[in-house]
Image 1 (cartoon, protein in one colour):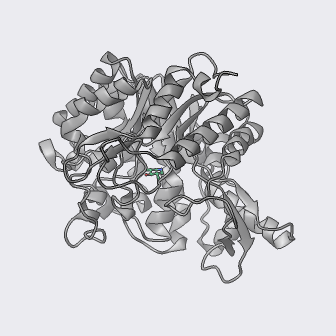
Image 2: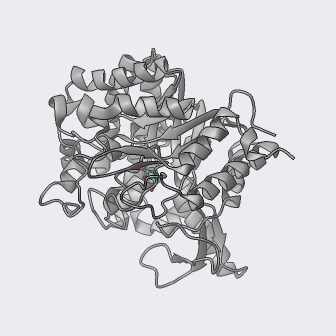
Image 3: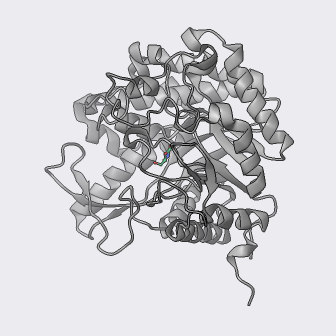
Length: 447
Ligand code: IFM
C-alpha cells in the first residue's frame, strides 16, 4: 500500500503555456509569441498566448497554491528568449527563474527545470530552427548559462521536453511553428534535437547540475489485428514515435525501421554523433497520456499506418483514449528494453470539459479525478512489477495555453478564469493533494 518512501509528487507546467508577458524585461520574441501575434498562423487564438495565465506576474500566488496543495515538486520550463535574447545573457530573465526557484525551495517544494519546452527564440527559428546544424551548439551555450545560474539551487534538470512533438507537429503536420509539412526534414530535425540533448547534458554537468535527464512522450502502439501488415505497421509507428529518440540516447543507434521508413530522405549520420547523443543520464522523464491502435494503411500520406479508435473506451476532449494500462506497460517496457534506470512520470493528465466560470461550490471534475486515480494505480502496478519509478507529476497545475488549440482544452487541476485570471482548485486538485500528502495511502480506502 502507498508508494516508496521519498516518492516525489508534483505538478508540471511550461513557460509559454502559462507565463504571459513574453516581451517583458528585455525578452525577445519566441516562435510561439510570433505564431500567436497578428499575422501569425495562430493569431485567431483568443485570448492570445501573450497573457496566458499571467504567471510571470502572479508566480508568488502560484507557488503558494502548490504549497497549499501539498506537492513536493514543481516542474517548469525556462524561456530561452527571456534569458538569452539575441544570444546575450539577460540578467533580468535569469532573475525571474532564480526568484521562482528560491520561493519554491522556501516553500519546501523541489524545483525541476526543463530547458526547452518548445518555445524557441524567433531569430533562431529564422536561421533554420532545428534544421540548422548550428542550433545544437547554441542550445549547449544556453544550457550552460541557465545551469551556471541555477544549478546550486535546482536539483533536477531536463534538456528537452518531447522532442518528437517538435519534429512531428513542427515539420510533418505543420500545426506548430515553423509550420512545415515535409517528411524529408524529419530525420535532420530529430538528429539536431538529439545532438542538442547531448550537448545540453554535457553543459549542465559542466555547470554543476546534479541530476540531468530527458523527457519523452511515449504512446504504446498496439496493432489493430494479428495480421502481419498491422503488426509491421505498429512496429513502424513505435519506431517513429517511441524509439526514434530513446534508442539513440540509450543504445547509441537509430531503430532499424527508420532508414526504410524515410527512404532517400534518410541521411548518413557521423558515427561520432552517437557518442555525443548517448550521454549517461541520471533519469528518464516519461510523459504518458494514451496509446495508439494502429493499422496498415497504404493510403496514409506518411508511414503507411493510421490510427483506429477503440469502439467503447472513454476519450478525452483531445480525442485521446483513456487507457491507464498503457502507463504500466510503458514503464515496464522501458525497463525491459533499456535496463534499470530511475523513471519519473513527468506528465500525465486529461482535458475534459469544465465551465468557463468556476461555480460557487468549485469545479467538480469526476472524469479527471478518475483519470488520475486509475493512472496513479497503474504506476503503482509498474512499481510492484519492478519498475524504478521515483515520482509522478500531474499535467497541469493550471488550465493553460494548449498550443495550437488555444485555451479551450482545460488540463488544469486548478481552474483559471480567463477574464479575471482567478485560480480555483478543482476537485481533482483536492484529490491529488490527498494522494500527495498520504504518499498514495488515500488511494486505498480503509476496510
Ligand atoms: O500541453 C502539453 C504539454 O506542453 C506537453 N505534453 C502534452 C501536454 C498536453 O497536450
